[in-house]
Length: 77
Image 1 (tube, rainbow, N blue to C red):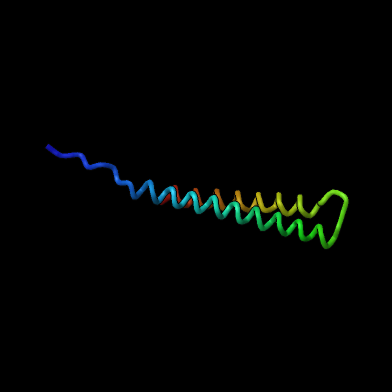
Image 2: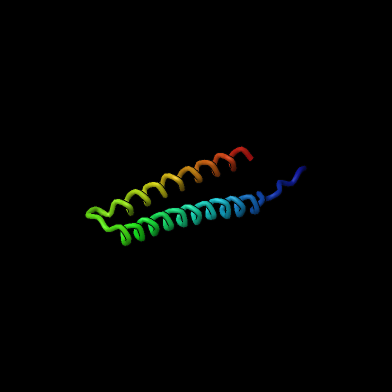
């Protein structure tokens, strides 16, 4: 009789590490984009804080692009 080996825990640990790294990268991109927008609004004041809005939305779009790209690369492997 063949004995069944327990499932490897290293794969699950590696996937957690990959996806938590992606989340940290996403937070960093959004944080830097928002910070840049706030600083631009301080230097060039306007009524609606347009720079903060535009930079934060652009940062969200960029971070989503990187997330989709990395997840698709990870699913291929």
